[in-house]
Length: 249
Length: 270
Image (cartoon, each protein chain N blue to C red):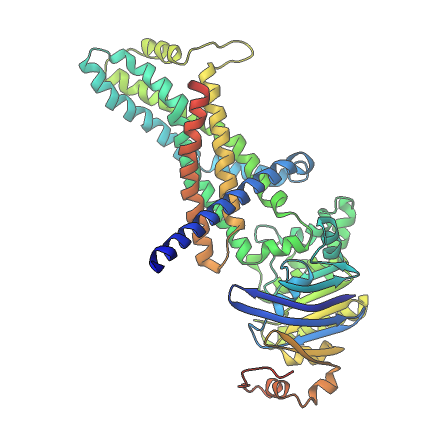
């Protein structure tokens, strides 16, 4: 469904991606682990066309995002939703208006149906009672749930989760992990999760990879990943610093 | 030699950046204009909100500045005219200066400082906190959603506020003319209207010069809002980036008001 081939990206002199290759099959949940600042979120942003690579190609259901026209890009974004790390709710719209936004913008859905679908989405995430509140009036965990409701209401085929548990307390992090599992199992959706939260990763993944120095190393099922001999993976799983300067191929 | 080359290179880069950003502002304005007819009905609530923000919030400041601008003008120029025995001419000067230049310009300056800076800050904050990226991912066009309602509101409210400012300026000038320069109210008003080449009729109830001032004000409103929104959309780098966007918006708006204001006057009154 999603395929990245040799994606390179640099911001000025700082190279973030050095030839990322990744294939995401329909229905699977791929978790990309990695330390902060290794380019995990940059990879996600390339998939929905928020960033363009310096080199390489990105295919989403056969559409090359790097050369897609406006309408093709809109289609890609309808199929692949992005859950931002902070939730990125529009701060001057209520939770309900935020969740309604993707449906209202389609301009073909009657208001009664929009209300019904929004209520359903908010209810499924336990956010219905906070529907009329503003994003500034709710907690970080609630903002994330509201953002997930906004993503789910549009019924995308795939969801990109950007650090879904970052900044949350352990209880809320587990709740979000459970929500992701529920979402994946209920809708048979494809998911790409980037995180450095190991508990979340091994709780939701069907495959796990590690982002290191602008490349994706060792994509494997969770059990094989845990037993990997790769020194970078071992260091990451053990929570230790890895000092080797150059990544060996 | 290397220093000179570096200096020239950095100047060249600055010029290129300015041209690129001017192009971005123009593109944003054109895109927003293109979204008015298809999207205005859908966005009526946002347009209404912006009409309040652009029109009602700055009204007290516009009123005070308008009134005192007229009073100051009458006092300073009136004292010089009275030395020449031409006190009554103050009305002609007030009418022409306020409706042609000072009214639209002062109002646009106030709106730049109060509304334009807020637009750049709001949109800039949305940019750096990924809200605009999120809108794009939801297939919501940020120009239609954020920029178009602001430009429409400023195009409507700037002329209205300018008119209020000019009327209050004329009233302020009249108060000073009567109390300090001994010009009677009837003579003052007759001379103000005469200065505006009054050709009022049923179709155009105000003198023609009022309209030129209002057209100028509408252009100023569009300029300030498009420059401010474009600066916000280009913001990057957290809180510092938002601050930079606000400064850019205010400085560029002031410069463009002066430059474009001159050419509009040149077109109408050459």
